[in-house]
Image 1 (cartoon, helix red, strand yellow):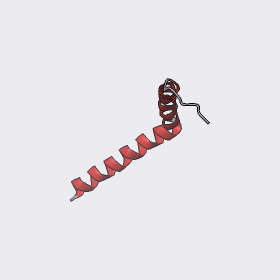
Image 2 (tube, one colour; image 1 turned 90 degrees about the vertical axis):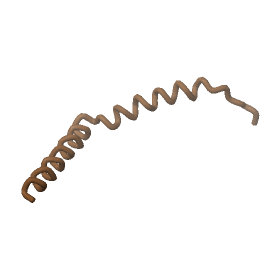
Image 3 (tube, rainbow, N blue to C red; image 1 turned 90 degrees about the horizontal axis):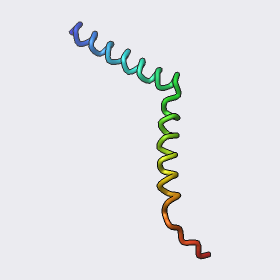
Length: 52
């Protein structure tokens, strides 16, 4: 029983450390910026119909 609690505690601390690093280094917005740039290139190359 004690071994299971220690494992659960280690998992919780590891998840906290990972989320803290993501928050501290602003990695989520850096990832979104990369995705946004790639999607921008894709949608800029699509032929557009400009009939109004």
